[in-house]
View 1 (cartoon, rainbow, N blue to C red):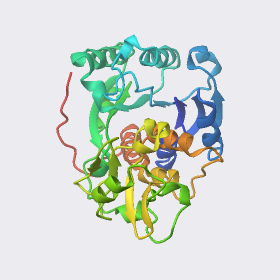
View 2: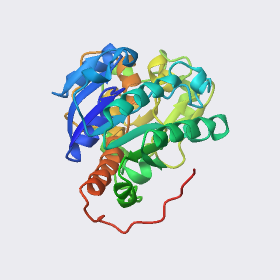
View 3: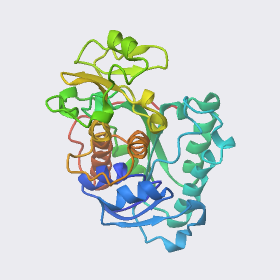
Length: 327
Protein backbone atom coordinates (compact mmCIF):
# COMPACT_ATOMS: atom_id res chain seq x y z
CA UNK A 1 0.00 0.00 0.00
CA UNK A 2 1.28 3.39 -1.05
CA UNK A 3 1.80 6.17 1.47
CA UNK A 4 2.02 9.92 0.84
CA UNK A 5 3.55 11.84 3.73
CA UNK A 6 2.76 15.46 4.56
CA UNK A 7 4.68 17.66 7.03
CA UNK A 8 7.17 14.81 6.88
CA UNK A 9 9.81 16.44 9.08
CA UNK A 10 12.79 14.13 9.40
CA UNK A 11 10.70 11.08 8.54
CA UNK A 12 9.54 9.53 11.82
CA UNK A 13 6.03 8.70 10.62
CA UNK A 14 7.38 7.48 7.29
CA UNK A 15 9.88 5.22 9.03
CA UNK A 16 7.17 3.67 11.20
CA UNK A 17 4.99 2.93 8.18
CA UNK A 18 7.95 1.53 6.24
CA UNK A 19 8.76 -0.78 9.15
CA UNK A 20 5.12 -1.93 9.13
CA UNK A 21 5.31 -2.92 5.46
CA UNK A 22 3.97 0.14 3.65
CA UNK A 23 5.61 1.85 0.68
CA UNK A 24 6.25 5.58 1.06
CA UNK A 25 6.13 6.89 -2.51
CA UNK A 26 6.01 10.67 -1.95
CA UNK A 27 6.64 13.16 0.82
CA UNK A 28 6.36 16.89 1.42
CA UNK A 29 8.23 19.06 3.92
CA UNK A 30 8.65 22.83 4.03
CA UNK A 31 11.77 23.14 6.20
CA UNK A 32 15.03 22.92 4.26
CA UNK A 33 17.10 21.50 7.13
CA UNK A 34 14.53 18.87 8.04
CA UNK A 35 14.49 17.95 4.35
CA UNK A 36 18.25 17.51 4.48
CA UNK A 37 17.93 14.99 7.31
CA UNK A 38 15.07 13.24 5.52
CA UNK A 39 17.02 12.87 2.28
CA UNK A 40 19.97 11.43 4.19
CA UNK A 41 17.82 8.46 5.18
CA UNK A 42 15.07 7.88 2.58
CA UNK A 43 14.98 7.15 -1.11
CA UNK A 44 11.35 8.24 -1.64
CA UNK A 45 10.63 11.44 -3.52
CA UNK A 46 10.60 14.46 -1.20
CA UNK A 47 9.20 17.78 -2.33
CA UNK A 48 10.47 20.71 -0.26
CA UNK A 49 7.63 23.15 -0.78
CA UNK A 50 4.92 25.07 1.06
CA UNK A 51 1.92 22.71 1.14
CA UNK A 52 -0.33 25.61 0.15
CA UNK A 53 1.41 25.61 -3.23
CA UNK A 54 1.16 21.86 -3.77
CA UNK A 55 -1.52 20.83 -6.27
CA UNK A 56 -3.28 17.56 -5.51
CA UNK A 57 -3.12 16.65 -9.20
CA UNK A 58 0.69 16.75 -9.03
CA UNK A 59 0.84 14.10 -6.30
CA UNK A 60 1.01 10.43 -7.37
CA UNK A 61 -2.01 8.35 -6.42
CA UNK A 62 -1.69 6.87 -2.93
CA UNK A 63 -3.63 4.69 -0.50
CA UNK A 64 -2.73 6.24 2.87
CA UNK A 65 -2.29 9.90 3.80
CA UNK A 66 -0.04 10.43 6.82
CA UNK A 67 1.12 13.58 8.52
CA UNK A 68 1.95 15.42 11.69
CA UNK A 69 0.47 18.80 10.84
CA UNK A 70 2.05 21.68 12.80
CA UNK A 71 1.23 21.50 16.49
CA UNK A 72 2.56 24.83 17.76
CA UNK A 73 -0.88 26.41 17.43
CA UNK A 74 -2.38 23.86 19.84
CA UNK A 75 0.54 23.19 22.20
CA UNK A 76 0.43 24.27 25.83
CA UNK A 77 3.98 25.51 25.27
CA UNK A 78 2.73 27.93 22.61
CA UNK A 79 0.12 30.68 22.53
CA UNK A 80 -2.81 28.28 21.95
CA UNK A 81 -4.11 30.23 18.96
CA UNK A 82 -5.33 27.12 17.15
CA UNK A 83 -7.03 27.93 13.86
CA UNK A 84 -6.25 31.59 14.57
CA UNK A 85 -2.61 30.72 13.86
CA UNK A 86 -1.75 30.13 10.21
CA UNK A 87 0.10 26.97 11.25
CA UNK A 88 -3.16 25.64 12.72
CA UNK A 89 -4.96 26.36 9.48
CA UNK A 90 -2.64 24.03 7.56
CA UNK A 91 -4.89 21.10 8.51
CA UNK A 92 -7.32 22.40 5.88
CA UNK A 93 -4.63 21.89 3.22
CA UNK A 94 -4.68 18.20 4.10
CA UNK A 95 -8.46 18.25 3.81
CA UNK A 96 -8.19 19.87 0.36
CA UNK A 97 -5.86 17.16 -0.90
CA UNK A 98 -7.66 14.15 0.60
CA UNK A 99 -10.98 15.32 -0.86
CA UNK A 100 -9.45 15.16 -4.32
CA UNK A 101 -7.23 12.09 -3.92
CA UNK A 102 -9.66 10.06 -1.73
CA UNK A 103 -7.11 7.71 -0.11
CA UNK A 104 -8.32 4.58 1.67
CA UNK A 105 -7.11 5.82 5.04
CA UNK A 106 -5.61 8.76 6.89
CA UNK A 107 -3.25 8.93 9.85
CA UNK A 108 -2.40 12.09 11.79
CA UNK A 109 -0.36 12.82 14.92
CA UNK A 110 -0.47 15.90 17.11
CA UNK A 111 -0.01 17.20 20.63
CA UNK A 112 -2.29 15.90 23.36
CA UNK A 113 -3.83 19.33 23.89
CA UNK A 114 -5.42 19.24 20.45
CA UNK A 115 -8.31 17.30 21.98
CA UNK A 116 -9.01 19.99 24.59
CA UNK A 117 -8.09 23.14 22.71
CA UNK A 118 -10.88 25.74 22.66
CA UNK A 119 -13.02 23.51 24.92
CA UNK A 120 -12.85 20.70 22.36
CA UNK A 121 -14.14 22.79 19.45
CA UNK A 122 -10.87 22.57 17.49
CA UNK A 123 -10.93 18.79 17.42
CA UNK A 124 -14.65 18.75 16.68
CA UNK A 125 -13.92 20.75 13.54
CA UNK A 126 -11.19 18.32 12.47
CA UNK A 127 -13.38 15.30 13.24
CA UNK A 128 -16.38 16.73 11.38
CA UNK A 129 -14.30 17.73 8.34
CA UNK A 130 -12.88 14.21 8.08
CA UNK A 131 -16.34 12.72 8.53
CA UNK A 132 -17.81 15.00 5.85
CA UNK A 133 -14.99 13.91 3.53
CA UNK A 134 -16.18 10.31 3.90
CA UNK A 135 -13.98 8.94 6.70
CA UNK A 136 -14.88 7.00 9.82
CA UNK A 137 -12.56 8.27 12.52
CA UNK A 138 -11.03 7.00 15.75
CA UNK A 139 -8.64 8.84 18.01
CA UNK A 140 -6.59 7.98 21.07
CA UNK A 141 -4.03 9.65 23.32
CA UNK A 142 -1.01 7.40 23.83
CA UNK A 143 2.16 7.79 25.88
CA UNK A 144 5.42 6.56 24.36
CA UNK A 145 6.51 4.95 27.63
CA UNK A 146 3.31 2.86 27.66
CA UNK A 147 2.85 2.06 23.97
CA UNK A 148 6.30 2.37 22.41
CA UNK A 149 8.65 0.72 24.93
CA UNK A 150 10.60 3.97 25.11
CA UNK A 151 11.58 5.57 28.44
CA UNK A 152 10.22 9.00 27.47
CA UNK A 153 7.13 10.64 28.91
CA UNK A 154 5.49 11.75 25.66
CA UNK A 155 1.71 11.91 25.27
CA UNK A 156 0.34 12.51 21.80
CA UNK A 157 -3.01 12.16 20.08
CA UNK A 158 -3.24 9.78 17.12
CA UNK A 159 -6.09 10.11 14.63
CA UNK A 160 -6.96 7.31 12.20
CA UNK A 161 -9.71 7.32 9.59
CA UNK A 162 -10.96 4.85 6.95
CA UNK A 163 -13.31 5.30 4.00
CA UNK A 164 -14.60 1.74 4.38
CA UNK A 165 -16.78 1.31 7.47
CA UNK A 166 -15.98 -2.41 7.74
CA UNK A 167 -12.26 -1.64 7.83
CA UNK A 168 -12.94 1.00 10.47
CA UNK A 169 -14.83 -1.53 12.58
CA UNK A 170 -11.91 -4.00 12.35
CA UNK A 171 -9.36 -1.42 13.41
CA UNK A 172 -8.16 -1.09 16.99
CA UNK A 173 -5.43 0.93 18.63
CA UNK A 174 -2.63 -1.15 20.16
CA UNK A 175 -2.75 -1.99 23.84
CA UNK A 176 -0.06 -0.88 26.32
CA UNK A 177 3.10 -2.97 26.49
CA UNK A 178 5.73 -3.36 29.24
CA UNK A 179 8.55 -0.83 29.36
CA UNK A 180 11.78 -2.80 29.11
CA UNK A 181 14.02 -0.24 27.38
CA UNK A 182 16.33 1.37 29.92
CA UNK A 183 17.72 4.88 30.02
CA UNK A 184 21.15 3.32 29.49
CA UNK A 185 19.90 1.84 26.20
CA UNK A 186 19.42 5.40 24.90
CA UNK A 187 22.26 7.21 26.67
CA UNK A 188 25.99 6.60 26.29
CA UNK A 189 26.91 5.98 29.93
CA UNK A 190 30.19 4.13 29.33
CA UNK A 191 32.16 6.62 27.22
CA UNK A 192 32.75 10.36 27.40
CA UNK A 193 31.11 12.55 24.77
CA UNK A 194 32.30 15.85 23.30
CA UNK A 195 33.32 18.32 26.00
CA UNK A 196 30.84 21.00 24.89
CA UNK A 197 27.95 18.89 26.24
CA UNK A 198 29.24 18.98 29.83
CA UNK A 199 28.54 21.49 32.58
CA UNK A 200 31.81 22.30 34.35
CA UNK A 201 32.67 24.33 37.40
CA UNK A 202 34.21 27.61 36.32
CA UNK A 203 32.49 27.68 32.94
CA UNK A 204 28.85 27.21 34.02
CA UNK A 205 27.37 30.04 36.09
CA UNK A 206 24.78 27.81 37.78
CA UNK A 207 27.05 24.77 38.25
CA UNK A 208 26.80 24.68 42.06
CA UNK A 209 22.99 24.66 41.99
CA UNK A 210 23.07 22.06 39.23
CA UNK A 211 25.49 19.81 41.12
CA UNK A 212 23.31 19.92 44.23
CA UNK A 213 20.19 19.02 42.26
CA UNK A 214 21.57 16.38 39.89
CA UNK A 215 22.38 13.51 42.24
CA UNK A 216 21.37 10.28 40.51
CA UNK A 217 22.29 8.48 37.30
CA UNK A 218 19.05 6.49 37.05
CA UNK A 219 16.86 9.36 35.90
CA UNK A 220 17.00 12.61 33.94
CA UNK A 221 16.77 16.24 34.96
CA UNK A 222 15.94 19.63 33.49
CA UNK A 223 17.37 23.03 34.33
CA UNK A 224 14.42 25.40 34.74
CA UNK A 225 16.32 28.71 34.68
CA UNK A 226 16.54 28.93 38.49
CA UNK A 227 16.20 25.37 39.76
CA UNK A 228 16.65 21.70 38.85
CA UNK A 229 13.65 19.48 38.10
CA UNK A 230 14.04 15.71 38.50
CA UNK A 231 11.89 13.25 36.57
CA UNK A 232 10.69 11.11 39.47
CA UNK A 233 9.41 8.35 37.19
CA UNK A 234 12.92 7.62 35.96
CA UNK A 235 11.99 8.69 32.42
CA UNK A 236 13.21 11.20 29.92
CA UNK A 237 10.94 14.26 30.04
CA UNK A 238 9.08 15.16 26.86
CA UNK A 239 11.56 16.26 24.22
CA UNK A 240 10.45 19.53 22.64
CA UNK A 241 11.31 21.62 19.61
CA UNK A 242 12.48 24.47 21.83
CA UNK A 243 15.46 22.37 22.88
CA UNK A 244 17.01 24.09 19.87
CA UNK A 245 16.62 27.52 21.47
CA UNK A 246 18.90 27.00 24.45
CA UNK A 247 20.75 24.42 26.53
CA UNK A 248 18.40 24.82 29.50
CA UNK A 249 15.70 23.03 27.52
CA UNK A 250 17.77 19.89 26.88
CA UNK A 251 17.39 17.06 29.45
CA UNK A 252 20.39 16.53 31.73
CA UNK A 253 22.06 13.31 32.84
CA UNK A 254 24.72 12.49 35.41
CA UNK A 255 27.43 10.10 34.22
CA UNK A 256 30.77 9.11 35.71
CA UNK A 257 32.33 11.66 33.37
CA UNK A 258 30.24 14.55 34.69
CA UNK A 259 26.88 16.26 34.42
CA UNK A 260 25.89 16.95 30.83
CA UNK A 261 23.13 17.53 28.33
CA UNK A 262 21.83 14.72 26.18
CA UNK A 263 23.46 14.72 22.77
CA UNK A 264 21.31 15.06 19.63
CA UNK A 265 21.93 11.39 18.87
CA UNK A 266 20.65 10.41 22.31
CA UNK A 267 17.53 12.52 21.75
CA UNK A 268 16.89 10.62 18.51
CA UNK A 269 17.41 7.39 20.47
CA UNK A 270 14.64 8.42 22.85
CA UNK A 271 12.40 8.95 19.81
CA UNK A 272 12.99 5.35 18.74
CA UNK A 273 15.12 6.00 15.67
CA UNK A 274 17.54 3.16 14.83
CA UNK A 275 21.19 3.55 15.73
CA UNK A 276 22.16 3.76 12.06
CA UNK A 277 19.76 6.64 11.33
CA UNK A 278 21.96 9.31 9.75
CA UNK A 279 22.20 12.77 11.29
CA UNK A 280 23.66 15.20 8.74
CA UNK A 281 26.30 17.81 9.51
CA UNK A 282 23.98 20.41 11.01
CA UNK A 283 24.45 22.46 14.16
CA UNK A 284 23.29 20.84 17.40
CA UNK A 285 20.47 23.32 18.00
CA UNK A 286 18.95 22.35 14.66
CA UNK A 287 19.20 18.63 15.42
CA UNK A 288 17.68 19.12 18.88
CA UNK A 289 14.75 20.93 17.28
CA UNK A 290 14.30 18.16 14.71
CA UNK A 291 14.22 15.47 17.41
CA UNK A 292 11.73 17.40 19.52
CA UNK A 293 9.50 18.06 16.51
CA UNK A 294 9.47 14.41 15.52
CA UNK A 295 7.44 11.36 16.58
CA UNK A 296 8.25 8.18 18.48
CA UNK A 297 8.78 5.66 15.71
CA UNK A 298 7.78 2.45 17.58
CA UNK A 299 4.34 3.88 18.43
CA UNK A 300 3.80 4.80 14.78
CA UNK A 301 4.88 1.32 13.68
CA UNK A 302 2.43 -0.40 16.04
CA UNK A 303 -0.51 1.73 14.87
CA UNK A 304 0.50 1.24 11.23
CA UNK A 305 0.56 -2.54 11.74
CA UNK A 306 -2.99 -2.54 13.11
CA UNK A 307 -4.12 -0.33 10.22
CA UNK A 308 -2.55 -2.79 7.78
CA UNK A 309 -4.28 -5.74 9.46
CA UNK A 310 -7.65 -4.00 9.28
CA UNK A 311 -7.25 -3.04 5.62
CA UNK A 312 -6.08 -6.51 4.63
CA UNK A 313 -9.04 -8.08 6.47
CA UNK A 314 -6.82 -9.99 8.85
CA UNK A 315 -7.98 -10.92 12.30
CA UNK A 316 -6.37 -8.78 15.01
CA UNK A 317 -3.48 -10.46 16.77
CA UNK A 318 -4.91 -9.55 20.15
CA UNK A 319 -8.47 -9.32 21.39
CA UNK A 320 -10.14 -6.06 20.46
CA UNK A 321 -11.50 -3.97 23.23
CA UNK A 322 -14.16 -1.32 23.56
CA UNK A 323 -13.04 2.00 22.11
CA UNK A 324 -13.82 5.19 23.99
CA UNK A 325 -15.43 7.50 21.46
CA UNK A 326 -15.16 11.15 22.32
CA UNK A 327 -17.51 12.36 19.62
